[in-house]
Length: 234
Image (cartoon, rainbow, N blue to C red):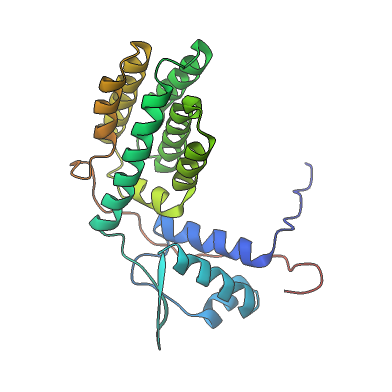
């Protein structure tokens, strides 16, 4: 078996990605206190990369610095979810209106394959649902002809809060069926060159009142991770 390549990225980046992943997945639930010294000991690194990672998490609204308590994992509230959906819907609507009639047969075939792959995955696999949903929505906007628009929307999909929102949905066949139904509806509207219908279906993908939404019931687990030191120190 070939040796795994060494991760040479800065420690702060690696620590950030791990803590962010633990928050998004629910391993570190809302209200958890992240004390620099304890986190540094947990991951076997110095406090400097931990401090940098926690600062980045605060900028992304995943944590809040509370004097005397450390960094506290934020609750994902309905207002934050509504804000993300509002921005995504506005920008994706613009992208779809610009791209409708421009999609090539190959692009529509690729989007269809993403939908059909979604239809057969395990309904409990929220990370795979997120991966395929992200891929479908990025493919949806790529033909818009506006690179800045595509880059902004991609950055929203890559933001950890977006993944955290996806993981707050009830995992099960009903939710997966809704995702597949909505994406098939969007795809059919694109085949029909009907931007009005595409935008109407798209609005259901951004419905904050969706009854499938509920806080994730994943059971927190104690994160365990150590990192190789950077060349020349940590």
